[in-house]
Amino acid sequence: MDVELMLKVYPFFVKAAWVTIQLSVLTTILGLICGSLGAAARLSRLRLFRIIGAAYVSFIRGTPALIQLFILYFGGPQVGIQLDAFEAGVIGLGVNIGAYMTETIRGAIIAIDKGQAEAARTLGMSRYQSMRYVILPQAARLMIRPLGVNINALIKGTALVAAISVIELTYTAQRYIGSTYKPFEMFLISGVLYMIIIYVTGRGIAWLDRKARIV
Amino acid sequence: MTEQKPFVDIRHAQKSYGALEVLKDISLQVHRGEIVAIIGPSGSGKSTLLRAINDLDPLSGGEVWLEDTQVNKTLPHRQYEKHINQVRQNIGMVFQHFNLFHHLTVRENITLAPKLLKGISDEEANKLAEEQLNKVGMIERIDYYPSQLSGGQKQRVAIARALAMKPKVMLFDEATSALDPELVEEVNQVMKALAEEHMTMIIVTHEMGFAESVCDRVLFMDQGVVVEEGPPEVMFRNPQNERTKNFLRKHLADANK
Image (cartoon, rainbow over all chains, first blue to last red):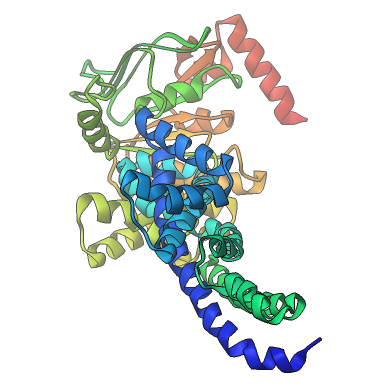
């Protein structure tokens, strides 16, 4: 193993890790937005919204994320959507993970005992008030860990955007392999950096989960 | 009883789940201050009838009236929501499984709805909570979470929560059925105290002793119909209908086991 080479190139990988972190954060935000809207649609009183929500989830979960990225980045310009690689990465991955988050959020909401909403409605609260003050505060606690699983998958999923040449951790490794012919060392640096990002995120999620526990 | 307009008026209530008819043309009038117990085997439709009163389980046919307001009006969705939320503020309900809000303290459980719906200040809400908790003997637990309470304590808090909305009528859906036997009495005491204040109450229960000592009238339901009704001393001592007799005999035998 060429440790000297690794020490020489690792600062470039740290820079690339920063891109991966940016991708992850923006994708998480977009995913949470899509997931909340998706869950609201799937739980809507209106059939049309439920159908739209279900279609979104089944399209995204039924096709490879890589194909979705390619449709957006390579197919987009054909229908007038011009995005640079980073933008396409964030939007593609965000909309993708949003479908999984839709199911996570919806699952947490329907896991709350029906009696909670019944008690709220019986006191005279509206559907909205019951959701806002009774169901969601309880469901939010339930969804922290499963959303953490989604975020974990999403961070690793950012490697896919190497395929549309965003210069993040995976792409950077490939690029240095081209000039050094040392795939083991290069992928190892990337892997370790992914692991650090995921470990720190995992600790953050666990901390949030502990903080949110009732009593 | 003097002739007056009924306070709660159920007219020809009918309810089906698919081909299964769970309520078959039931009419029930409850007067102000009256305490009515509904007894009967499980599956008899007694809980369904109770839950129809605040339209939690909407009827398939028939009408429910509270004073001069029809509860189960047919209205466009938005108008219905507005209407029913208004009506429900007048109808307190207590559930078998308490349904306290797990994420809120006892105090917050009681103040949430009055603050949201009546727009009262925090200070007024706190006073209200203290007043209601004093009534059910739970003031020492005001800052506890539901998970820190026993079943009986939870149910007393649930009663206080319902009372904080100043309802005109209280519905009890097997309020003591989920409790350990030694915790039943503390909840019964609270309900008795309410009865003494002449709260109008409709009580679905399996506690025959309680029904006999507290209620003005007892209904025996079976298979979606009211088989027999009357004052408790008649219903429990000298029921006329064969089905009532059988039910009470079986119930007594079970209770004595």
